[in-house]
Amino acid sequence: MPVATAFVPLWNRAAEWERRLAMIRDARTFLYLSIFYIEYDAYGKALLAALLDAQRRGVAVNLLIDGFGQRLGGVLMSAAARSELTREHAALRAAGGVVTFYRPSRLVQRALGGGQHVKIQVSDAGDAIFGSSNITQSSFQGWNEYSVAVRGPVVATLLESYGAIGGLVDPAHVNQLAAPVAADTADLALDYWFCNPNLAQGALGPIGWDGPNEVTDRLVAMLDAATSEVLVTSFYFKPVASLMDAVLRAARRGVHVEVHHSHRDALKATDLAWIAAAVNYPRLLEAGVHLFENLHGEHSKIVVVDRAWAAFGTYNFEDAAHDRLAEAMLATRDRRAVEPALDIFDELRRHPDNLRVTEQSFSQLPTRLKTRVARLGRFKRWM
Image (cartoon, rainbow, N blue to C red; front, top):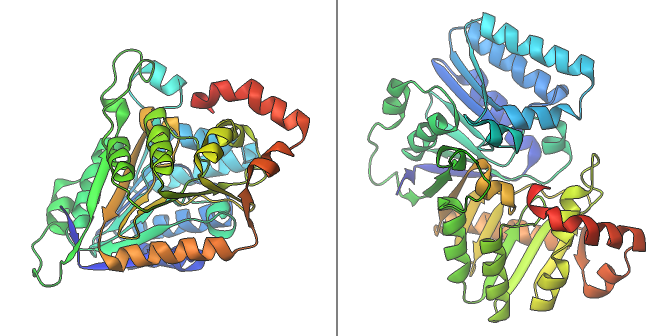
């Protein structure tokens, strides 16, 4: 199990953003960043400018972007903004930086939204940021996000997985980060769960493929081990069948299950992701699950079991996280990591934007909306 010498929770949006930029400014020899997509807004521009400056002063900059994610995020941008973003990538390459777009090897995987969703930032200083955020205003001024900053041997573990999501990794950099540290400082154990399903699939890609997926399987085991409480955040709660069954099993055996995800208005481009979640509201509510929708958007991915075991990272509770996207989570029983996660749930319960969903409130939705849920919900896997 990898260990950390330092652990800093990054729930505050401004704190994470400043830490990201500071890591780039302070880098001296190398900097790696994997991301689902970059939006060409104030945040995207600032990050790309910082990366270009780092490359020009001699830092080996390695930027990995998911091809499907960037295409999806591109819908939010104008044609002019997309062109400017392409020029920024070209400028970074021209300065000697590595810019890679990950696309799975099989045509069917690419056609069905296969890609990588792991967000890792690592520098030569031995620091890493790992979590849910994309490089976009939505992540730093809109939705809730949760990342963590870590130091120690776990950073080398994170960087090693960079290669399994399409990145180019210099082994010397991994070796540098894996240098031994004093046992009395590396005392925060963090289990790293990682899977890129695209590497395990056949000619049909996700069609007919059901794993194994280490992250899904570990989360199922985590839920099945719960005896008193399960707390979950996810962008939209529409898990693969095995995870949904584990949630229902927990609730039906008397475990307090609490799920926080996004309101249908939080994603301006479409309500399809909410529909894919809402189709299972009756089953969840009947089982006794406590459901909450966040008006401004819940994009963090946190699971806490029995107030003693926490996992956090990039895995959304959705089918795509199981069979199309590379995902990763850090898990731990260390109180220094569990307590901040519990504090987040306390804050969510108090926040006026966090609305409780009940059988009554669901039944009072407009007829047109309930009809769309019934009609389109059958396609949940692809939404």
